[in-house]
Length: 256
Image 1: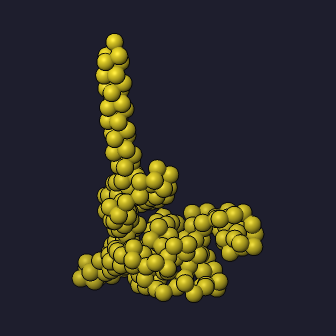
Image 2: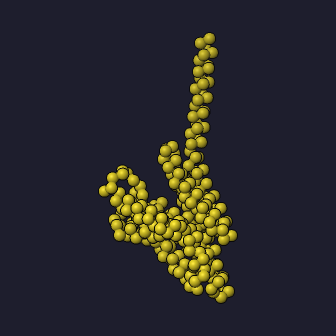
Image 3: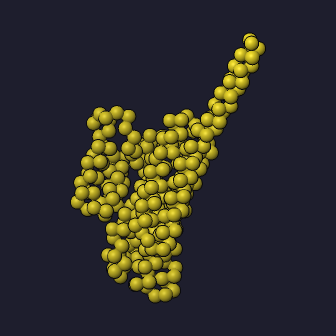
């Protein structure tokens, strides 16, 4: 009888141990699965953007941003952060916040160029949009090796860049296409934001360690003005919010 009970206890322990190992393995893959959902959102966004379907393309970028927020949060909560997860996160961000908005701008520029430029120029100009992909990749590579960017950023974060372009394309599409030099303005903005992605400009984050006004004054000012911009300008307000974020970061910058 004792031997039977002992064998049963040993079997139960073995089963529990195996279940624990399986649970541990499953937990390890949850954050990476969420990151892959971010990547897939970016792929779908790029597909819509190539077809000139800007609203669903922008929605997919926003969905990707939600996944991007929760993958890191989940990894920390489950205590399963890993070097692979960090690299996968950057690869996903290149697609969702680099390629997807760049394809939106590419399609937009193609419309602008077709309406206002000769055929030879119109076939070349839109490809300038893909500078955003290259500089987004550089931005993410710098972030991965830059130990200064723990509580703030150096250069414009790629999600902010993607939100700027998505909102700008949707909010200003018709006006820019109709203007004879709208394509030139877009190219100028592409060059400016490509530089901002890798510029050595400290930019604040919205990570709150407390709710105290003094410790989070910059963030509170940013949020209050952003709310006003969104109420007054609607969708265009989102691009204005990113512009306000850049200006406020420059005005309040602290050397990292």
